[in-house]
Image 1 (cartoon, one colour):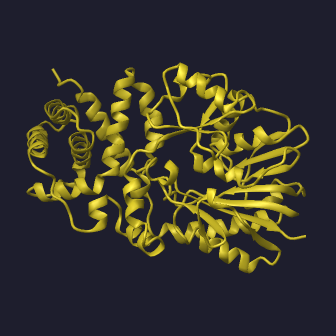
Image 2 (cartoon, rainbow, N blue to C red):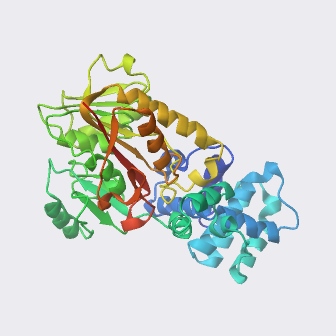
Image 3 (tube, rainbow, N blue to C red):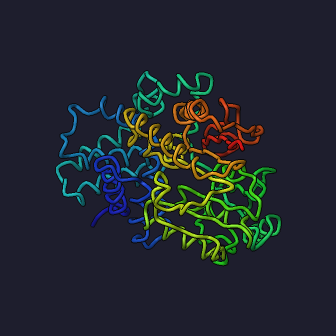
Length: 437
């Protein structure tokens, strides 16, 4: 008989292998795996193990490098992942040591590695008795790649330690109330009546912050379209546009759809939203979100298209307002997607910067004179943000930056930057641009 929970630990090792060994996103991996686990508590535990192992991967790998007599062979990477899962349970999750060690060691047998059961047991038992060996560099101590630490030191020398710390902490659960269905105060009452509670910040006006984890489907009014899950920093990207109900609006990179739904809730019968995404599959999720929120409308148009090629989709029209939530390094949302630390490489950044510049130039051509564009990223790197906008303004004669107030974060060149964890929000950059007549 296997120790209780051994199969769950074996699945954690498989999921970590998919992320670290095969380059899969944790979000996609869990979306596939979690629905197959019947017990909600087991689902929560698997998710917690994977998040903790990825957040603290480098610290755990340093400890293993000191404790293992010789490194595991490449073909035993599944066992490396199992050990990361084991250390996460003991160090970060503070699970019962006996149960965690027994179940994780037994998982080695389920992974067809019976000869290694003793090794797993010995290493994890040692972790229950001794402090983990720690490295000396910022990257080793905070479990970040050296290139990212170096870039954060260059960009945010006074804030680098706060950023690194925030990246390793669980993010709060943010909601945006669908004002077409219910007011925020009324929804908050429903939430409290259901045994939950939330903080209602002054800004964004429809945001609610819940510091405990909820399954979205368990929220009151979820199926009726009362709320959607959306970090407050993401909500601010649409707020920066200050949309009017009768405007013609373009959301250039719309999926998965939180911001498009936000715009659709503002656009009136006289206005229009064109929501683009290159991936038709991702647009299907957006359609589902709009349907749940009762925001489907003939004046809300979804189209699978490449935003960098307006001639293929614009049909000569121009827009009053454009939201460019650009593809980026995602370095502002590491606390929500810890695998970003291990998937992103320094050499990825120049290509992203070039793509963002091409998108800015292409979309500027379909903005009306007098119109506004918000350029937003969930990055904290200045090359994608402050420097990107400075270069755009320099080469674009009819573009001028418009001020955004301190609610959008600290001044960063012509835009505003929020760093992860500030006011409980994700890291985000915003620049509001106006096209001169």
